[in-house]
Length: 196
Image (cartoon, rainbow, N blue to C red; front, side, top):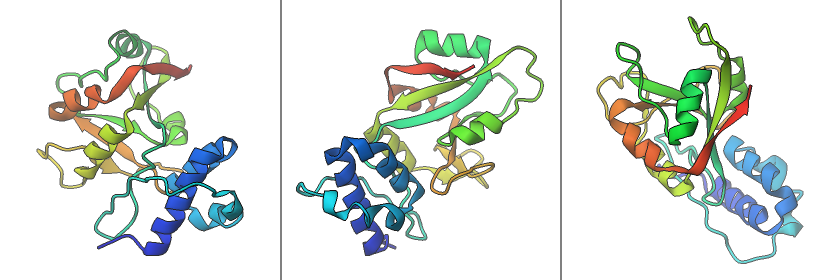
């Protein structure tokens, strides 16, 4: 099923705005991610001046736009121990799961969700690490993503919305057999401690 034409048109308008009016870029990108198109695009209609600007659109089974603007910076976040964070920073890679733990490493597009998350059993200080990803690579991985429920053994990114605070954002589980592909789309020097 295709995304609703009005949503596509409004999303494209917002992508144009993000490109041509840098002062609105963050708000436009948030509108795209949250699919809050009407609230933003109407008041900015006159600001759209250039030819069409491309937007990567993907649809899930219900026709919802699930991909972000191809022009957007893509960030995902993970709360982790300072030991894991130091290794992650040194290698610029998401670390593999510990033997015997969940076979996927979970991150989120939603910073507020990560802030609220509590790692049970971690006794050392924790930090939030931000990963900046190549948008096209991320969209490619996300185009093959599956719902976490019933996904055991599936070699794909796993999605869930547990604890998500904003519509359009998701948590992602990176299974061990996708870890190398995920690490390839992390930008050079794209890992940083975002919050202590």
